[in-house]
Image (cartoon, rainbow, N blue to C red; front, side):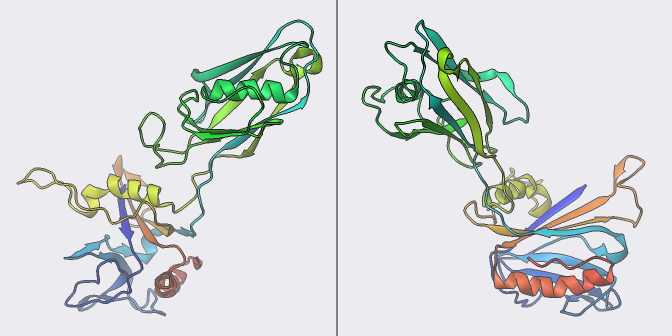
Length: 330
C-alpha cells in the first residue's frame, strides 16, 4: 500500500508560481494544460483525476493522482480527545474476621489487548477484627503500599503520579481517605515513571483475592469508570504517522549524503480533523495483483474546527459526490 499523509496548519491556500503557501492544503484537478486548482462545484465531468498537495517553505508535497472511478473509500472524522483508563476500588463494609485474612489487589497489564500475568504487581493487606478492620483502615494501608512515603496513620487523602510502587502501566493513584482508591493509566506521549515515552494508551485489569465478605477481609468492589480510548486526530498519533511515512512524503533517504530526518510538520500538541481516501491504482476491485500491492491511501490532517477545513470540504465534497460518495462534513 502506498500511504501518504498531508498536514495543514490552518494557513489559507495561496498558490504562487506553482508553489503552495507553507502549511496550506490544496486540491488540484488534472486539466488539458496540466494541474490546476479544484474549485467548489467541480465534478468528474471537469476532471476525472485529482491530487492533494501540502505547501512547505520551499516546495510542495504532493499525493499521487487518483481517478474518481478508482476510489473505493472516502471517510472523515472530527477530532475526539483521548481518554485514560480510570478504575476504582471501593470498600462498602468493614472486616469482621477474627483471625488474619490477607486481602490482595493485583494490577495486570492489558495494554497489548490481553491480560499479561507476567506483567503484574500485587499489594497485600492483612485484616483482623482487633487491628486493621474498618474500610478506611484497609484502604489506608493499600494507599501506603502504593506510595511508600504516604503516612498510613490518620487516613490522609493521597493523590500522586509516578509512584515508585506503582507498575509502569499505571500513572497515578488517589485515595479519598474514606472508601475509594482510584487508579489511572497513561496516555500516548506522556513520560512514564521509567523515563520512556508512552507509545500507546495503557490499560490494566484489577484482580482481588478475598475482600468479598465482611468475614473475609471486608467487602470491596472494582469498577472501571472510563476505558482507555486513543481518541481520533490527537497530535501524538498524527506525529507518529508522519514519522513512519517520512520516506514517502519527504524523501527521507539521500542516496549521496547520510540520511537526515526532515523537520516534522505535525504538532504533538495540536488536534486534527482527518480525511481518508483509498483508491486502487488501476481501477480493479482487488487490493493486490499477483501479490503486488495495488492500493493508494491518502490521509489529510487539518486543524480541528479550522475554517480552512470548511473550504477544503467545499471543494472536495462535490467532486466526491460525482464519484458516488457522500459528503464529509466535519
